[in-house]
Length: 287
Image (cartoon, rainbow, N blue to C red; front, side, top):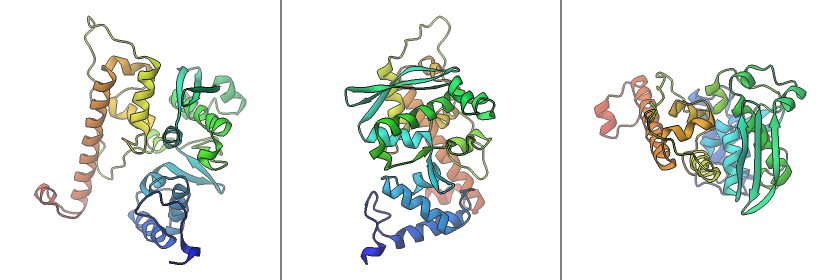
């Protein structure tokens, strides 16, 4: 293998050189699952950008978008990279008015970063549909991007933006915005949350509880979900609804079960497209 064709960051065993990236990129482009990737060369650009950041190919395809020659990352992917590098945060605020994060490296507080309605209005974003419908997610995305640029630029190796930051807009559908599990034939219903009876006291979550929940949910080495995916799978719209579903362990267990059901439904839908029966799936048939 020549030096010219070597990729320097062996983040995964699947991609170790440019030939690997080109082969995998061709498969992704031919699959038709990625609307923003028209040909293999565009897929390869995403894969190489992800490789440089230590992101596996599939996560790169779902979470990286090249806009005007600059990479945009989904908020979940950016947050996962920061957590893998030892950064953490506590929510000082997360509501319809904005998001404020106390940003840490290890146990050291680096500073507080905020993005709210006034910031969105100043940037001409306040009237965009995604800010009206998914304000908390949008505020968090801008907050985590500010944290990365101010305190952890080495993690993202320069000017990497959160999704929608360059153009000021995101796809109208929340599924596209959040890189949810795709299905070509079946819309997977969200899990029905187990809501305690009115007479049952809800135990509040501490900031550490929220940090643990999102760390395990968003981390690419864990569930690898986005915030919007979590909301869809659990049937919630706001961060404050999480304690109403149970303890951290209970909610993580329900989320993992809902994720597995979604993956199973996607596999079944793909099998139906290819004419594979349930019996074939159980016997390990290739689809």
